[in-house]
Image 1: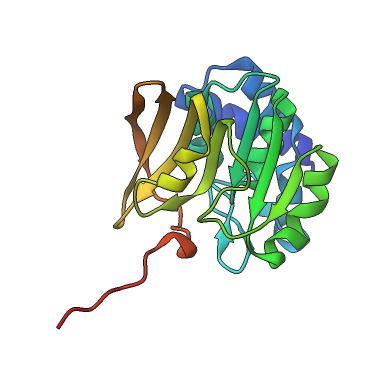
Image 2 (image 1 turned 30 degrees about the vertical axis):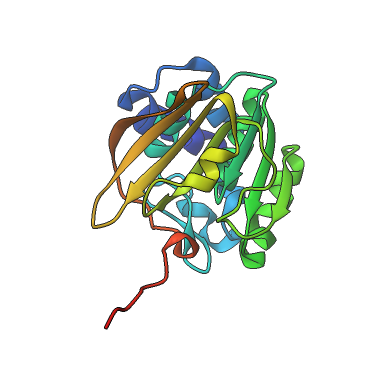
Length: 209
């Protein structure tokens, strides 16, 4: 399979046509080998409009949705980024010129994505996803959905920092952009999306008598 041609088709048919006009971001998507972020026997489907499984139920976000999230973040070279359960996004941000940390909790996922992340110059941290590794980030992004406002992730932002994630409690979710300022945190809804919810972010059920 000609993956280089597949990348160009993906950008032309899934990214540009969905109003992702940032040429630096388009160039990064053309450069990063998306097929390396899934097991070798699934590489053929990396550029299709499907959420390809990485391992243990974790999936790549649709290129259309991820590119729209990343454009909303307006990443700039030299900024610090945290990619939580977002290995492909981490490599794209590194290609744009950010200093990126990828946080993963599942060793099976790391076994698949660790090599390409190292090649992209991304630091990998294995830790629970509820608590971000470090703080003072300019950009935080996730390829998975969360069930509500991710307070711990927001606390890890620097002033002026942005967080893009899908919030989902039912069959459909909403991509949102948070921006942290001296006065507080703003929230803006972006578009509909429905990636799988991170199981570790779902609160334990409580029962009352």
